[in-house]
Length: 79
Image (cartoon, rainbow, N blue to C red; front, side, top):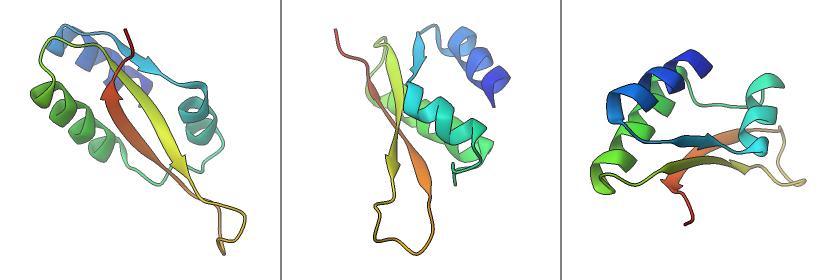
């Protein structure tokens, strides 16, 4: 996944910042998005926000959920 994000940095000519929560969800196996889904989200955000740096965060399940999960959210990075 990390190499795919690095490839997209070059392809799209933007910075892509992976938030700490994204890294933790990925490395702990809680991220429900596949590599293809994360790539699609990054490309869609880049299309809608051309030339802007992007940030990857996550949306996490709450304590009331029967199982833990997290999915990626890609948005323009703060200036």
